Length: 96
Image (cartoon, rainbow, N blue to C red; front, side, top):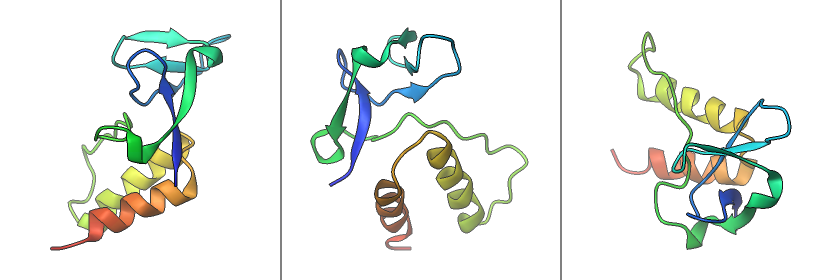
C-alpha cells in the first residue's frame, strides 16, 4: 500500500516547497507547513484526487502517452514513491 504526506488538518496531499524552514505547503489552506504539521497517510484511506500535483499542459503534445509522461515526471518531482506512480499509471491506462 502506498503512502503520501498529507496536511493534518484537512488530510489532503501537500506539496514540497523551497521556502526556508517550511518543507511543505497545503494548497487547501494556502499555507506553508512545518514537517510536524504533516503526516503520512495510506492512499486507500484518502478521498480522490490523491495528489495536488499541478501540470502545465500548454505547448505539450496531445498524445496520451506524452501527457501521462508529463504527469509522471511532476509526481516524481513532488517525491511520490515509485509504487504510487506506477499504480496511477496503470489506472490511467486502463480502458480506452
